[in-house]
Amino acid sequence: MTVRTTRRVFLSAATMMAAALAATACGSPQDTATGGGDSAAPVKVGLVYSQSGALASYGKQYIEGFKAGLDFATQGTGKVGDRKIELTEVDDAGDPAKAVSAAKDLIGKGTKIIAGSTASGVALQVAPIAAQNKVLFISGPAATDAVTGANKYTFRSGRQSYQDVVTAKSFIGDPTGKKVVVFAQDGAFGDANEAAVKTVIGGAGATVSSVRAPASATEFTPFASQIKAAKPDLLFVAWAGTTAPAMWQSLDQQGVLSSTTVVTGLDIRASWPTFGAAGAKISFLSHYFDGASDTEAAKAAKAKIPGGTLDLFHPDGFAAAQMVVRAVQEGGDDVDKMVTALEGWSFDGVKGKMTIRAADHALLQPMFQAKLTGSGTAFTATAQKSLTGDETAPPAVAMKG
Image: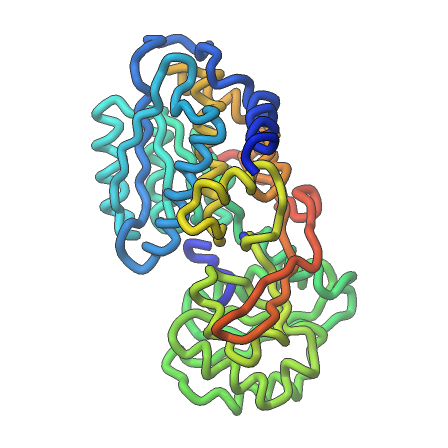
């Protein structure tokens, strides 16, 4: 699959270490929150995400990660001080209108923290609601860059598209004088990916062009031939949909995968078979996959996630829960104090060191280069390189509200 700009891996001693890290990174969740409010009343947290619809699999990983993260950050109590974290889960089905309605309903019932947003379109509609009502909003897997700097009440617990493309750039070193081709379908998804590559990699000195295929295309040999003739130093593939297996097969058969560096985004594990025999010949930029990190948070998440295998969006949910606990611990019921507590905060997440940039609430975090080995039905991902949060940091933007 591809970079998804429209939305878009012991107990005893290890458990004790996890608790120690939680205490260091967040302060003890057993301490009474300092921001005022009823010290015994539950803290209402609304989780509005995709339980159904096209991104339901992403939403499932998000909520599993959130519950594992809440257990980790509260040392198994589900409380901050004497206050229970009371979760209300609402399915937005990836529909911004449903998400906005759900957010307003939760706010009307006294909820001051909203988290979720599997889809980018949802996040961009919920963010203004948070600002209008002065509630904390922590967006999840939604990858659109526009969430960063949306307003002072909006944060994110996942990566953004810029971080994906910077990771792709890392495969060719200094881009100056290099030739990059973007292969994508016609439409908004392809437009967004092409624009991002031109901004990030082209802006660093590469010459960027594109080969675009109609969304209805089922025969890809002519496009593969065009790409091979262009002799790019890097081919960036942005693809979505059921034609992916045929597309990858054509690129492989025409020798594209063996003649240049081909980079695409590593999606959830369930998508890996779509690469077929081409999978082992592709270089992947990755937000996360099981085994990409070996942090105490990752170990704790694996112990709680059903099946014990982490996937692409488990870290987003886990980090969101850590942020919620931090916000409540430091802010109590005072949302402005919650915001202040999160701005500039660094913590140890599933992926490694995470830092919330105070100026625009970008979440600086590690990203990964990955390779697949094995077959399309039994691929294994391994990290080739880990990029730090500073190396993948997006440009700072002015806070819009």
